[in-house]
Amino acid sequence: MSPDHHRKFTESTLVVASHNPGKVREIAELLEPFGIAVRSAAELGLAEPVETGASFAANAELKARSAAQAGLPALADDSGLVVAALGGEPGIHSARWAGAEKNFGKAMQRIEDALKDQARRGNTDRRAHFACVLALAWPDGHVESFGGVVRGKLVWPPRGDKGFGYDPMFVADGHDVTFGEMEPKAKHKISHRANAFRKMVDACFRA
Image (cartoon, rainbow, N blue to C red):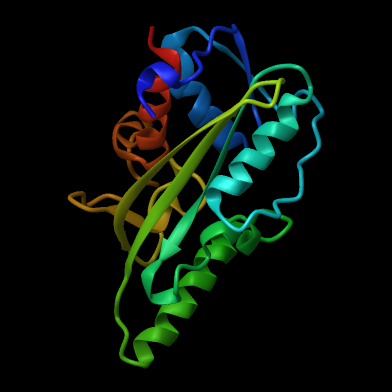
């Protein structure tokens, strides 16, 4: 699709269709240069739809469309950690691995246990990537979607408290600090979300 065919974002307020404060904060920081007011789904009392999609793209779209029904354009992100040795798990179930109490310490331990189990069988592959799809939906049902990835490897024990989710165990290729140790500005330059975000900005936010 040529850039001219993307719908331009002209509104002043955007709903971030997430109940994850870390994710809302990260997206708000990325949108800051455009002077767009960001509201979160939680703030507006919007329910979290059940993520029934079989891919990051399907789930991002589902969440964005659901939030846009409130009458404002909505941006949703579906993202997760894809671990090579675990056949792509946790993937679209990344948040689910943390349980209802969103305990990512437990989720990281679960990944490490599974990797140790693989290592006992001779598979010592610790490669992983974060994948993200951003879907921007308007109240009329129009949706634009953009994807991004960042590749790296998993370390143990987890390090740093700057990120969220699985960040403390992920080291991006070419770096020696985890996303949990990395300053937000540095992470925003290379993260999966930043990669998807750049594509969306070029298509929908730049005049």
